[in-house]
Length: 301
Image (cartoon, rainbow, N blue to C red):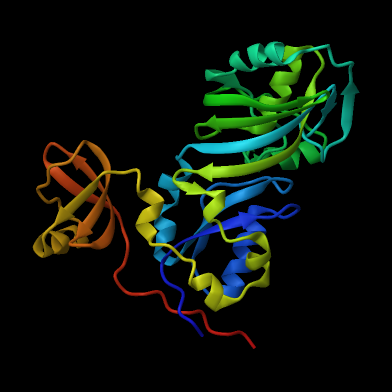
C-alpha cells in the first residue's frame, strides 16, 4: 500500500455528511491512526475541509484560528429552529421591498466586530452537554453573546426572497446566526439555505480534492494530493536553527533566535520541526512533530 505522508489533505466536503464522517472515512481508506480536520462544517454545508494526517494533527489549533470565507444563500421571510433550511419552520413574514442599495446598506451594518449569540444547534457545551443535544431534547439555555469579526460581507445576487452573499470572517463566526440576524434587521426574519466554504486560511476550494474523489477513497490518488504539514501554519513566521539547536528543542530547551514574539514555525535547514514560541530570550518548543514517518495501520480482517 502507498504510504501516506504526514501533512494536509485539502478536501472538499460534500452535502449531507458531518465533518467527523469525512475524517472517519479517510482514516479508514488511508489507514492512518491520527486524522483530524481544520474546522467543522455543518452537514448541509460544503466546501474546504483541511484534513490533518499523522503528526500534522498537532497543528490543528493554529489552523482553527485562521480566517475563513464563505458563499451563503439566505432566504428572507422564513425562520427555523436550527436557523437553516434543515430545521422546523417557526415563523413566516412578508419580505419588505428592498432594492440593491437598501440591501447593501443593511449588510454594511454587520461589517467589523459584532456581537453574535451562538445557535442552540451547535457543538458548544452547556452543563456538560452539547447545545445541539439539549436543543433536540426541546431544551433551550441562555447563551452569552460573543464578539466575532466580519471582514467583508458582499451582495452577490439579490432575487427576493433569496440573497446570495460572500462573507469573509474571523474564527468563531456562525453564518447561520449571521443570516438570522440579517433577517431580523430587515424586519422579516431569515434562514440559511446553502453554505459553501471557499477558503480557510491559505487553503482554497480551487485546490481542494473534489468530493467525488474523496468518496472514491483511492489511497494512492489521495496520498498524492497530501501537502506538506507546514502549509497549515504558513501564516506564522519561520525560524531556522542549526542541528545542535534542533537537538536542544527536541529536549524541550530554549535556543537563541531572532523572531517576532509569539508562535512561529521551526525548521532545521529545510526540515519542518513544528511550532515554537518566540520571545526576547529566544524560542522554545511548543508542538514538535516527530521525525519518524507514520506507520500504516494494520488491515483488519
